[in-house]
Amino acid sequence: MSTTKGLEGVVATTSSVSSIIDGVLTYHGYDIDDLADHASFEEVIYLLWNNKLPAKEELNTFRRELAAAAKVPDAVLEQMRTYPIDKVHPMAALRTAVSNLALFDEEADEQDEEANRRKALKLQAQLPTLVTAFSRIRNGKDPVAPKEELSFAANFLYMLNGEEPDETSEKAFNKALVLHADHELNASTFTARVCVATLSDMYSGVTAAIGALKGPLHGGANERVMGMLSEIGEVDKAESYIKDALARKVKIMGFGHRVYKNGDPRAKHLKEMSRQLTEVTGESKWYDMSVKIDEIVTNEKGLLPNVDFYSASVYHSLGIEHDIFTPIFAVSRISGWIAHILEQFENNRLIRPRAEYTGPDHQEWVPLEKR
Ligand SMILES: CC(=O)SCCNC(=O)CCNC(=O)[C@H](O)C(C)(C)COP(=O)(O)OP(=O)(O)OC[C@H]1O[C@@H](n2cnc3c(N)ncnc32)[C@H](O)[C@@H]1OP(=O)(O)O
Ligand SMILES: O=C([O-])CC(=O)C(=O)O
Image (cartoon, rainbow, N blue to C red; front, side, top):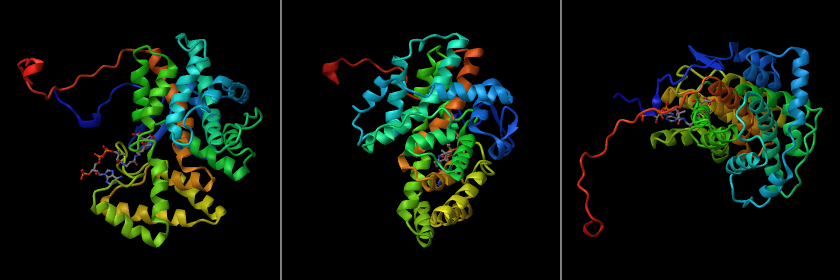
């Protein structure tokens, strides 16, 4: 048996949801650069779930259906109020809340295509409601009910802040959602597929995926990037901070990637958004500091920024609390998780690789009293 640490380079499934070929990312064949510049997040969800872009009427219907499904059962919000709310990380709260949603969905365990499509819609629509409700409850405010007439991006910011966003913020947030929606067989998507390949239900797959996304080597990196920027504080302190960290072999969050070795195609969009938004807020130092760190890490280590690096200063500029960054990643990536779950169900086989055994051979049993 041969092994590859971390399954590097192993092709574990076929998929038509998204591809990374020669450093180019596409969602079902559409280049991420085109989608980032032109698509609404709702169009991208539709594309990922239906393998085609929606026509105008299809998009309108889909938007209405999503908006109508956004309300979560009251019991789930009531239970959220009982979490140790000022201590738990919002990703832990989200993981629990999504699992909780399943308890109140009578068709949680239904496995037919129609039921799965209905659950997909509910999960996608309700994640923003959960994330924003958690943020508001812990800040002593009441959750804000979704507004059906708003776009997905605007609705998230509305439910978070209690007021509708300006056009610049809505557009930027929409683009961030588009850029994070899917990414081939990343760790959380693989987790979702492994989970549902046992023929477990969609809520279980999404709950498991949230757990995988939470880690700092994956989605959890964006919050830590902002933690690092805040700790550095000023642009002229960046060089010594980063060089010292690299000398101590500390990983710089937001850099490196298992698949992209010549750069993450999403990073340039987030970099430009960071430039524009920090100019608007009058806090260009976060952008300048990020660019400085980017130069140093690239020169010293040959590592390039991934999707998490510039997204940190983007979300910060939108006034979002730092520990909500990774839940926002989940709000977008659930679209990809669901697309992969549906694809897995279409042509399922249990996912069960092997391990090469490295433990001792032929151990003699020693009775308890003699150990
Ligand atoms: C949405 C996403 O999930 S994007 C990724 C988000 N995660 C991060 O930004 C966390 C920081 N980055 C990393 O930890 C890694 O680059 C990963 C997890 C993204 C990819 O990991 P892998 O492909 O397994 O690379 P691995 O961790 O083996 O690194 C290879 C070498 O580069 C170094 N390296 C990789 N990333 C970094 C980094 N960000 N900072 C410093 N050194 C790094 C490693 O220390 C290792 O060095 P060594 O060979 O001297 O031991
Ligand atoms: O693909 C990966 O390994 C991580 C990543 O960039 C993502 O999930 O967006």
